[in-house]
Image (cartoon, rainbow, N blue to C red):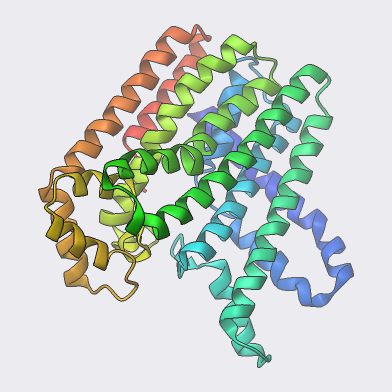
Length: 359
């Protein structure tokens, strides 16, 4: 874990340096762009650097040292993650992120305080979209800088392919998530679970753990067989990670998660948890749940009622079982992968972190 703490310090330093280096470019365009720099620093500060850690663990399956250009690649994944969160908050109309105002709410505040024409909501949404796009550009730039310093060109190509595929998967997963939130009235309830599981895989599971592991390992020169081993480790861990997130989105402590209790219920998330619960409910109860999900004005008593329903149907216990099953699958894949003792230890710690996650 000490090495991983050092990784986080190096990633934090690189991100700070990268934004500092971009300040003159952005300011040269216009002083009106100052909020982009301010918000970039704020959105890239703190956090567990989970995706960076996974990329460096992947690289560590092939190499004992961690060169600076690999830190660049890992840092690029953190910027990509920040961009995804900015866009996700817009789509979910989220007020907060990590206990602070979300990007579009910050831009709304800027509009109100500046006395500009038009609505704050429109300005906030448009500005945050562009801010997320800027972060995506930053991510690609830093990733390209990192792989340019790698002398193993086949490894560079393999890593770039994985990075590009990750971006496609996340975009597709985000769209599928939007579809599920709106198409539920015409979707057969028997298909709801399969559809929700598909969103989990493409919106989060792949890019949270599988893709970073594989990107790092590919850059380190991993064989196709080793990359497949990491996919077998990363995908179930990513699924477990997101399913835990779904539980936290309903039952999480706001002081820990940085988001209001029951936020996913107000946003109308059609998660695996919801699909499991509705499999056990009579038609009248399903209709009531459908009416409540997505109501941004749900009060505490309605949130408590929905939480109790999810628990009483056994959906929470079933989801905990699925999480445990996915972690076990990953642990078995780790044991059979044949990586070094140090790499195996790091991957085992990753599996433990996912299974014990509280925020």
